[in-house]
Amino acid sequence: MNMNPKMSENIRFMPDGDGYKARIGLIYMASSIVMDAEMAAMAAEGVSTHTTRIKLPKVTVEGIEAMMNAPELEQAARLLASAPIDVLCFGGTSASFLHGTAYDHGLIAKMKTWAPGIKITTASTATLAALKAVNAGPVALATPYVDEVHARAIRFLEENGHQVVSSKNLRIDTDQALAEVPLEEVYRLVRAVDHDDATAIFISCTNFRSVGAIEALETALGKPVVSAIQASFWHSCGLVTEGGCKPGYGSLMSKPVVTV
Image (tube, rainbow, N blue to C red; front, top):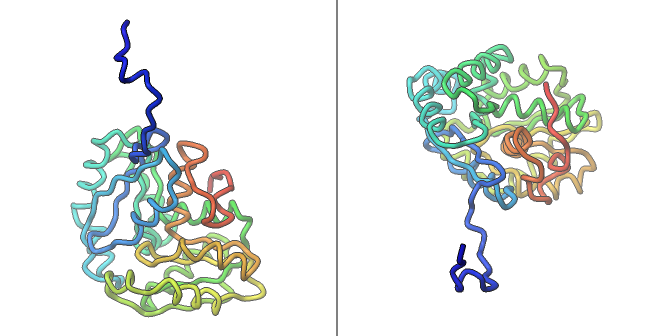
């Protein structure tokens, strides 16, 4: 077969975002902007994220429940499953832990029926896998949530064996306001929530900036820092490929994925 002489030259192509290592499907809130941007920042060459969105009325128990009971959730999963993705991630932490571990497991079971043959995770499942990977026991918790949702986060962590020895929350109830919290404020919040008995710190919420500060926080605090977005990306990548995460986003990124 004759080769086009122009193609036989030493041509350098630039990375174009093709997900030849892993294609991640992400179900994400329509009003949110942080998670898919941070996943792109952490992605090594060959990993791509493809997002379908669902509407979150308000970041309260009632608003989250309305989102999870709407038919758009199933539609989003089926839409993503029509693309050649390798893994499907539900990118809502509070939405997947709101009613406890059994609810999160039930969500995964439903997603498997909506997206057959595709690996499935949620932000909450990924968080537990990440905490196990960094050998976390008792944790400190930082969230932007209102008090009732923050309390559900504590309950979820503790029912899965992670005593919450210290916690702080910002009491934000609108989704767009979550994304407006500067990274410097997130850094200060996490520093303030640290506790001598905490073996790791967890930053919850997938519309709350975090990953740009994780390396600096681990250096300052001398312990693992896990965020919901970081854990979701790490878990999604690790279910289908190796080397999908760039260095510089925390000690978790060098850990193999473990089952929970």
